[in-house]
Image 1: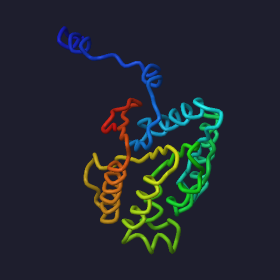
Image 2 (image 1 turned 180 degrees about the vertical axis):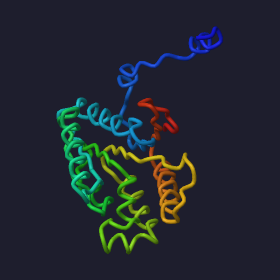
Image 3 (image 1 turned 45 degrees about the vertical axis):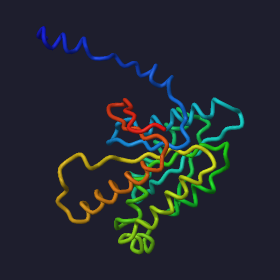
Image 4 (image 1 turned 135 degrees about the vertical axis):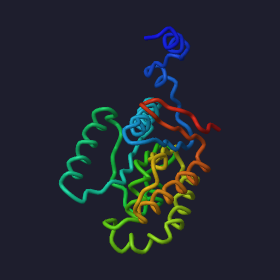
Amino acid sequence: MSAATSLATSCLPSVDPGAAAALLTVARSECILGGQKSGKSRRAEQLAAIWLAQSAAHRAVLLATAHAHDAEMRARIERHRRERSARVPGLQTLEAPPDLPAAIAQAGGAQTLRVVDCLTLWLTGLCMPGGDGALAAATAANWQARADDLLGAIQACPGPIVLVSNEIGLGVVPLGRSTRAFVDALGALNQRVAQVCARVTFMAAGLPLTLKAS
C-alpha cells in the first residue's frame, strides 16, 4: 500500500455495523431502497425487532409480495421464511394479495408495524406477464391508479410501516421495450412512495445512507 493510499484510508470514518444497528429508530413510515443483496430486507427486519422489543403489546407483520411460479421460487420463498423466523421470531409473515393497499389496512392497528417486502415484486405482478392473470392485464397500462391507492394506504396506516423496494435504474438502459417500461414505472413508484414517507434510506453493502428524515 502506498503512502498516499494509507493516508486516504486513515482519513475514512470507521463504521461499526453493530453500533449503527443500535442507533436504529422506528419512523412513522420508511422507504428502504437499494440493489440486490444490499441489506434492504435485513434493515427492515432490524426495525421490526426493535418495534417488538419496545412493548409486549407490539406486533410486526411482514407482507410478502413474492409469489411462487415454479419450484425454485417456492424453495427460495420457504428459505427466506425460515431465515426470517430465526432472525426475528416474533415477525409474522403473510402472503400479500395483489390488492396490497387493502392488505396494509387490514394487517392490524396502531400497535402493529407492517413491513412490505417488496414493492418491486408487487409492481411486477401488476405490470408483467405471469402476474395475476386478468388483474395484470387490466393494470399493466394504468398501474398509477394502484399506486394512488398504495400512497393512500401508507398515509392512512394506523401503525408504523416499512416499505422495501429495489433501485434498478443505476445500470445501463435495458434493451427490451417492456423492461424499459418497467424500470421507468418502478422508478416513478419509488419517487412517489419516497415523497409520502417520513424517512427514506438507501442501502449499499449493508450500510444505510439516509436520504430523507423528518
